Amino acid sequence: MASWVLSECGLNPLPRIYPKPRTGQAFLNCNPSKLRISRTDQGFGSSFRLSSGVIKERNWGLNVSAPLRIQEVGVEENKGGERVINGGQEFDPAAPPPFKLSDIKTAIPKHCWVKDPWRSMGYVVRDVVAVFGLAAAAAYLNNWVVWPLYWFAQSTMFWALFVLGHDCGHGSFSNNLKLNSVVGHLLHSSILVPYHGWRISHRTHHQNHGHVENDESWHPLPEKVYKNLDAATKILRFTLPFPMLAYPFYLWNRSPGKTGSHFHPDSDLFVPNERKDVFTSTVCWSAMAALLVGLSFAMGPIQLLKLYGIPYLGFVMWLDLVTYLHHHGHEDKLPWYRGKEWSYLRGGLTTIDRDYGWMNNIHHDIGTHVIHHLFPQIPHYHLVEATEAAKPVLGEYYREPKKSGPLPFYLLGALIRSMKKDHYVSDTDDIVYYRTDPQLDGARKP
Image (cartoon, rainbow, N blue to C red):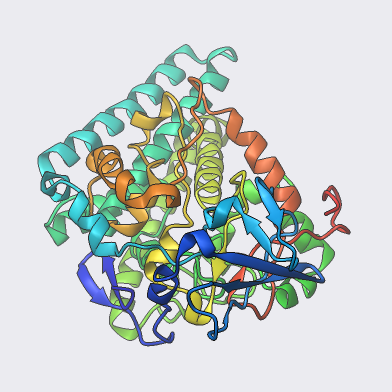
């Protein structure tokens, strides 16, 4: 299953770029009670070696760059100096899972895969009515008590529109490709997102999630790339609030270490048969930009800034916050992969579910991210049920999200901690963890 991936158009083969990933079957044949783990610290990371009393002659050394600090519970050493962790039962999130993608799929009820275009359109109508209603109310009341409330509410609704357009891009909105394209263009163009350009790059993100080099968004920087960044770029990348304003710049220039634009048909992001779609979306984006220029003359630039400009910036911050924390900021260090250690399943299992309190329903349960990443064709209104059904299969590979209050203020703490600690990864190892640059302003020393 690692050589196949679910895209918005069905089950498609991945490009044959990587060697077939390790299945971990031999590891599973070992007796867990006799598992021993030895570690030799080397520089920033550690190399782990697995051995078993059952298989004595085979070397199960892993090419791993480990986190600087691991909370060690129930660790003992035997007379030979080997570390025995909870009788060999400590969970390692980087270990190949004892289940397949098909096992998770089988556990999910069949009705969770059914797409209801009428229900999907119902969410679109709900959100569009809310957007226009909020704008009309704010313009009518027009006082400085109302405006900050409006900006928060409207930026949240812009984010909700994005999520529905995101579902169109995955094909989870409906089975009708034309309906998905039309609705996706209307929703995303209205918030200045080039629909097809983003859809294609986001597909790349899903197909390569958890891969250091080939992931598309919020992927870690290899040490060599990181150390070649100038000081200003490092500050913009790791000092709040600048990273939470990154999305428009990402659309134009992608991430550090990558080239191309979501607007240009000849970008490295796209293959020749996608250029027409990209051009169409760029034209739609340009039409929306022209409409906004016209509205600035009709109502004045200040009024347009209050009604659209500030909510747009708030939407960008919502998008960057949510997408970053679905792949960063967990209390435990989570692995990233490359080479033979990467697989679609292992990469997807490193994603993180988040609870957004009252916002869960407003932004269409986007916080149920693990199952969404593994099976992006499941409609958003079935993700919670699908996640509950998959938990017995996922076991400890599923990390239960911390419960939020009405508003998810707790996520700001996770964001700040991650920005201070998660800076770059090893250039060479196949399983890597984030490392901290102690020289970066505001960084915590390891």
